[in-house]
Length: 100
Image 1 (tube, rainbow, N blue to C red):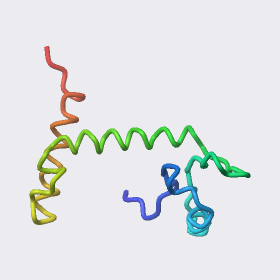
Image 2 (image 1 turned 120 degrees about the vertical axis):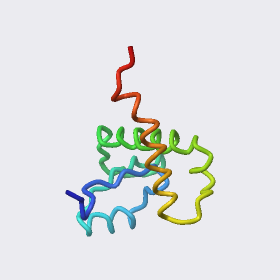
Image 3 (image 1 turned 30 degrees about the vertical axis):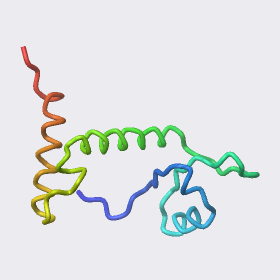
Image 4 (image 1 turned 90 degrees about the horizontal axis):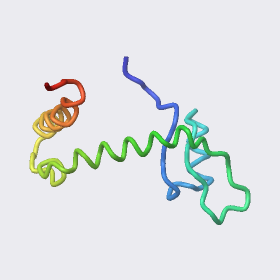
């Protein structure tokens, strides 16, 4: 079932601004943004949820190792999406298949 609205917004310190946090909260999205070091009253950050951001970053880095994805060789959305699916399958297949 597709998710219409995200529950969490995982971002780095570059997005730590009161305006960004306020807009997200108005939309019902919980901001998971670590506070900058110079904040006087740092807001609460769920660092357990923030760990998921690292997993997402690593996934994108693995996909960008495919030159065709990193440089967007494919001109159409359909062909780019198809190659993205192939690259993801190539990355994830060894985790699901046990070789003897």
